[in-house]
Image 1: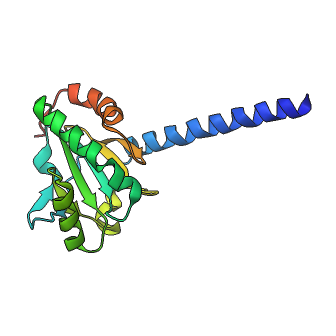
Image 2 (image 1 turned 90 degrees about the vertical axis):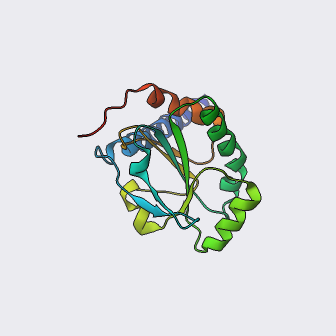
Length: 177
């Protein structure tokens, strides 16, 4: 009997701990900055990818690498997510930030996988404004004003991503003065 109660207590503690961790990551993403991000990343095509160019759109910034199995497996879902958002004329833009060291590897991968959304290169220094990145893939959802509002750690699918982005798509865009 004591063993059963102990096991139930342990399960409850683990569940509460898991909820606290998830809540912490959601809150920390939103609390990192209340100011619009004005970052520029070097695009793999030679053109800079500026977050400020996407004001008025909800940006999903996907930090990934070609050597990351989870990252690679979710690429088709991300491609479909962007295609569906574009087709529905939603103000949503997916941007991939590769943490690979070799740009040519990323260019070859993008070509092979037929990735149509912008891809740029990132590193520890350029990603520092996003705070803690415990692993990849990780996605930052940036609202229409350019502020980080959510963080998804780990691989996801287009349905889940669409749900997480939906409320920010509905928000009104107020252009900064």
